[in-house]
Amino acid sequence: MKDNRLFVANKPSGISSNHFLSRLKRKYGVKKAGFSGTLDPFANGALIIAFGAYTKLFNYLEKTPKTYVATLWLGANSQSLDNENIRSVCKLKPFAMDSIDIVMKDLQGKITYVPPKFSAKKIDGKRAYALARNGEEFEMKSSVMEIFNVKLIHYCHPFLSFEISLSEGAYVRSWANLFAKRLGVDGTLSALRRVSEGRFKFENEKALDPLEFLNLAQNSYLGNEDNIKDGKKLDINEFQIKTDGTYYLIFDNFFSIIKIENGAVSYCLNKVEYAYTN
Image (tube, rainbow, N blue to C red; front, side, top):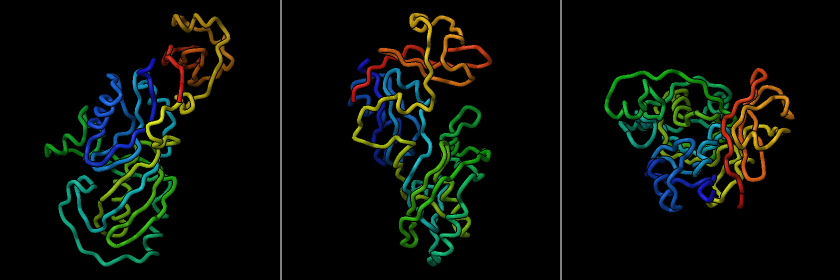
């Protein structure tokens, strides 16, 4: 039970998310650990970490919107759209603030974009960034991301800093690239910091109550608790809520996640030990 833990760590820039996770495993002396939402090596900030059985909860956590603070380098060209693969820098005249405001307001809502080749997207089972680093030719499929809010923080040409809140799976690098293209120039991120994911934010690695962050409604099982403990087939008539959906059930020292669909009940996760202490 002591190995089950959910918290937010502050990943430094300059190392991969996997390398940072290895550090945390050594720090806490745990073997099973995982993270949600990869941060690129050049990026830093909030990274959701789970130990033990809580690593199975990532798909059920509320992680939207994701909020970042970023700096766009106008005139810089990079294949990876960050500061790691700068190919050229073009000296530009400063832009009028009206032009920046118009483009920033226009690039909100749902936007179609092409993910960067240097990303964790999979192409035929392989990570896109691995193919890109090997010089292999491939095309990325367009995707849709939702931009909830963008706020200009500071513009000191050629660097433009902004705060952006966007949907899960979206790329700030791609949004910044679209922004630069709307201005008619190249652009790449020179800095990126994740501030939060949903209500997840860095608080000195404080242990979090997983049930407070589940993107699920609570249901109640009215039958014999031993049926759940033993993983037996469940009757929908023994649940308080019978409508289709995915729910969590809380008991004295464990919780379960079940799915109701077309009158049938199935287990998603069962008997996850639970004894939250801050």
